[in-house]
Image (cartoon, rainbow, N blue to C red):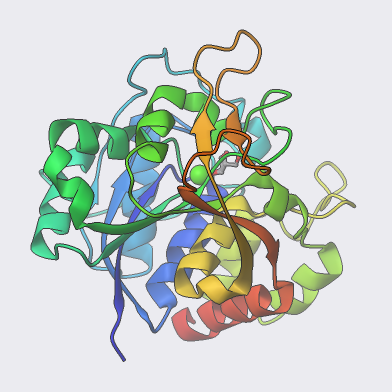
Length: 309
Ligand code: BDR
Ligand code: CA
């Protein structure tokens, strides 16, 4: 089987962590590097989490430290919703290894140049590293096979009324990426809201309680407690859906639209404007996910748990 070479650009983050172990476990993916960036937490903490996850699961890939937003002051998220270190209840051993000597932009550049035309980037964080890469090394644009991102929305937001967190955190960067001409698959919050994971489903998925199931449970604050129950409306595991779409794009139904990012709006800064009805008469630049096959998604999580043990 020819494996798909993937670089994961992320801000772990509990859902990033699940996404990362899913792509690491997938038979058809060849994970080449983990490039971290500021997002859910500041860049030191996302890098630390990335390195610890990579070591705990013996990934043997370089992990790099990344950037803060380009044009905008970094705004830390109220991380209490994701646990003190953004990893739910999961506490991993301190990493023994070190970061890549390259920062995330340089590591992306190096790995893309090693396999021109082949690399898929799985982006589950603000798009700062990727926008900087495209600005510093514009020639790599044509060497990237595609970007599958968790970010944006067709409608509404999860951070402001109109914006999704990753895009809002660095809207200028997102604009550069959407305008790059690189084939993009967008897993917005719409499809994640349509794919809630309920407590009884977690009971079944995580029943074996091996190391990996326990880690996933800890990431998701499972089993719930009186103080922090599993929400009745279910959990939305944003980034894990983007990982699923890289592993098997057929898990989603897609529509091809033109998408751009609002960077001047007073109350809409960071909105992904998805031209569903093609008012702007622009060539579509993004495949937008609409529905996810939840059973297939669960099967990928089961596979990850069995494979990693
Ligand atoms: C996205 O924002 C982050 O908090 C999550 O890790 C995910 O990438 C969801 O909007
Ligand atoms: Ca993320």
